[in-house]
Structures are given as structure tokens and as C-alpha cells.
Image (cartoon, rainbow, N blue to C red; front, side):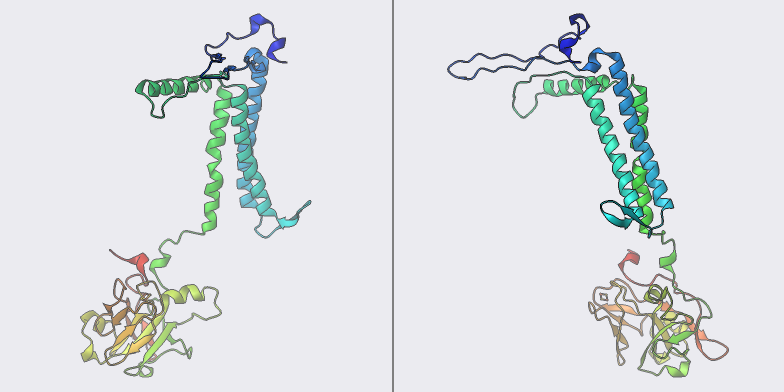
Length: 352
Ligand code: FES
């Protein structure tokens, strides 16, 4: 049905300026402006039942979007990550990826399709001819734009077509949940995990090379020994994660040569234990200069003085290496007397 088939009296009143000005050819403008073709009214403008049908179609599309978003969330939670599915003609693919792609695509597509169908069939259908004008808008033009915007908002009939409004808001409100669900893939929140290592009171210091618990007599003056916590084995699932925080450097310094009072208190007979993780960007420190008690990070040459609280004496590191308080247990082995009292490692923990 087109507007030509509609009785004249049922047609909406013709809009002012709808057809634009028809120009006349002259010497300056050899081609006459033909103006706009006659305006064709949409079926929804003249038949309320057709308008209702369009309204239901738009609402249906927004509702499908809501269902697709819910299906996305359900798929994300319910489908195992490693389940395959056969899809013709692609073949075997991951069922979770397929379901997430289909539901997310459907949710987006139906929001878009609903908005387009709404605009094409129910929103104001006015043809406007506007003259070209300078780019900078005059104040009255800006005022007109604002007025047009308000008119447009009014003509979109959001207030009158409550079904569309409510379903559209529902679809738009639910859709971002898909993104929120994906945040779960970032893994659990670290909580305070990064602030602590596995060191705790009573854990023995184990030589990283021999895998044997260390006695004070195993640590000679001038040597550098690397240690790990008792019970942490290389085949452990969490080994890399834990050793990246808990690795220790053990050195023995003549107690008289220890300048820092707390360092002396936290040592045992001059044996001091410091984090092996550089406080710049986390490289493992490995070079020890026994005359000066300096340790050097090979990455960017940060240098720490182990006889003076491991303070930074050169390089980009921002703060001293954390010290582990140690003692000796009843069986004569070196043991931790607690965890580090500050986070180990690099700039994330800079205390400003
Ligand atoms: S990581 Fe040690 S100096 Fe940069």
C-alpha cells in the first residue's frame, strides 16, 4: 500500500518546505534546481494498525537482544572452556566461543535492527530542504538546532510508546553485562597476595643449589648463597609464582661491619638474608662484591649495600632490598622469624 492508494482526506497535512524551492535556469545557473520529488507517506503515518505492528516488531527486536544477552551470560557460566562442537560448514570449533559469538552478535544486531526499524517506520518522516551556509553557526542557528533536537526527542514518541521505550532501555541496560562477565577472564583479584611471600615463622632456609636446609656453618664470610623456603619444590605448580617473591640472598658479614642497627638485630651471627628480587623492575640479583658487601643487579646496574640495610647506592632502584628476619631453630638450622615486613620487588610497590 502506498500513499497513492490512500484517500486524499486520510493523508497527513503537507509539511511546510517539504519539497524545497524549485529553481529557474538562467545565465548564472544554467541548470534549474528540480526540487525534491513529491513526498511519499509511509503506511505507518496513515494506518495506526501498521504503526502498532511496527511498534511490536521493534519491541520484539529489543526483547530478542535482552534474551541474547542473558543467553551470553548463561553460556559463559555453563559451557566448559574445552568443549568442542561441530558446526557445518566450519567443522569442529570451541563450543564456548561459538555460543559467546552468536549470542553477543545477536544482542548487538537486534539492538541495531530495532533502532533502525523504529527510525524508518515510526519516527518523524519530514523532508527538509536547507540552504548551504557558512560553517560557523549563527546563534539563532544554534538555537534552532536545540529546538530541533527537542522536537526530535518529542517526535520520537518515547513518552507515548512506552513498550518501545521500556524494552529499549532493558536491552541497553542488559547489554553491558556481557562485558562485565568477560572481566572474569582477568582472573581472581589478587587481594593481599602480592604483599606477602610464603615465608613465615619457623620455615627453614633451604639452599637453592643443594636443596638442603642451611646451618650457620654453611655460610662462609664472603660467600653469596641463594635460598628458598622449606617445602617449596621445583615441581610444585606454584613454584615460579612463589620463588619470584620468596627468593633470598644470604651473606655473612662480620657483625662489626654491619652499619645498620636493625639489620644487625635481624641477622644471626652476622648472617643476613635479603630479598633477591631487585626493587627496580624485579630482576634477580646475582653479583656480590665481598670486599664492599655490595650486590649488583645485572639488568640496570642498581647497586645495594648489604652492610647498610641494603640501601641503594647506585642505579635506578627506588628503595632498599627488604630484609628477612632470621634465627636458628632447635636443630641448629637457619629459620625465618616471619615474613618480610614490606612487599618485595619493584615499582608497583613504590611507596612514593
Ligand atoms: S631491575 Fe635491577 S636495576 Fe633494573
